[in-house]
Amino acid sequence: MPKNLLLVFTRNPELGKVKTRLAKTVGNATALKIYIFLLKRTRDIAVKVAADKAVYYSVKIRENDIWDASIFQKHQQVGEDLGIRMLHAFKNGFKAGYEKVIIIGSDLYDLTSETIENAIIALENNEVVIGPAEDGGYYLLGMNSLEEKIFKNKDWGTETVRKDTLEDLKDKKVFLLGELNDVDVFEDIEHHPAFQTFLK
Image 1 (tube, rainbow, N blue to C red):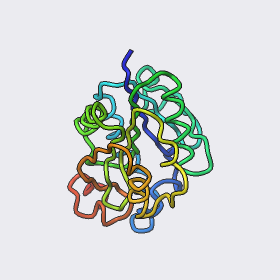
Image 2: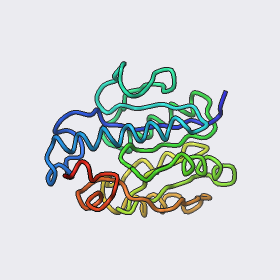
Image 3: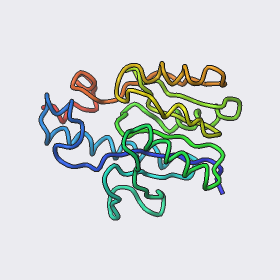
Image 4: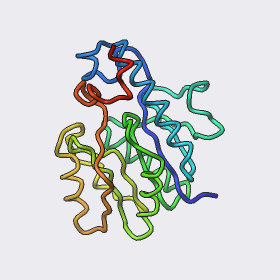
C-alpha cells in the first residue's frame, strides 16, 4: 500500500457558510460558486498525487458529491478548533500505518499536484514540511511523525500561525515550500484571470 496519505480539509458548500470574508464584497451566492470552483480544482489536483487520499468534511459526510468514494476515504472533522481537528486527522493517518501524512485546505487556486509531490519528497530528509501562505498561515503541512504541539495554542486564522508553528519546530528539520496565496478576501481574486467569470 502507498505509505503516504494526503488529507484534504473542506467545508460543506452551503450558502452563507463559506468564504464569508469574500462574500462581504461579492455576495453569498457568488462566494459559494467560487468555493465550489475551488473545491473542484482541489479535487483535480489531489487525484493526480501518488498517495492515498482522505477528505475531511466540516459538517457532515456527503456520499454522492464531487469526492469519489473509490478514490477518497471520507471522514468527519472532530474538535472545537482547527488545530484539534487537524491533530485528530493526522493521528488517524499515523494510526492507520501511513509513514508520511500531508494536509491541504481547499481554497488555493495556485496549488499544484507537483507542489504536493515535492512536499512528500521533502519528507525523505526533513521531519516537517510547510507550505507558507501569504497571509502568515500555511496552505500545506506534512510530517513523518506526529508533532502534537504545533496544533495547540495558536490563534487560527491570524497572521501569527506560521511564525508560532515554526517556533514550536525550532529543534526539527523543516522544509519550506514556495509561498502561495489562498483565497480569503476579494483582493485575493480581484485580478486573477481564473476568477473573472465570477466577477462580471
